[in-house]
Length: 229
Image (cartoon, rainbow, N blue to C red; front, side, top):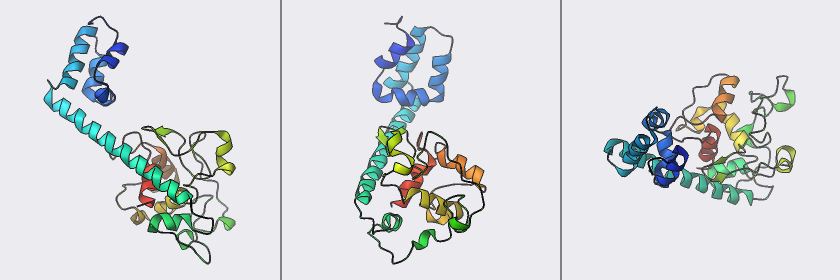
């Protein structure tokens, strides 16, 4: 057993914890060390088995956070499905934010004087600025939903015929609009920390992994969650 490769060792160790172990700093150091496979196995196994009680406790807490986060993602997915059933006469953004179907006689007051082209505070029809450039190939430019799978949950198809102008994602009409509003008014989602002051900084912040304990979930998904609370 002690001569097994590191790759196989990762399957032998309890799979409930292995993902969290690999993200743990001390565990990464163990894997990268020059000790024998036998010594590495014993050190990693001790973390999982509880011999290093403090580290094991940390791993278990991280696992609990992972399960909680996945539950949050599934809840968001279900809410989007419900919002996607609304007819076109309803304002999807206001229906999401206010938690009930909303209809406007005119345009949506929440996005009045917000530019969808450059995310500035003016009408899109009068905009002379350049486009707010989204990351290519990793996000739908119509609804701003990332295309990657997050902890087993996918919010947008990565098929080319379902991205861009063909997008029918239920987050269309919600996420992009809410993200633009948030850039100018952080009080619409006070629980989310964002220090970006320029459009460039904000673009980077939107699609980078959250630093608030949410792991590989980009900040823009946290905005989607905030929009539907």
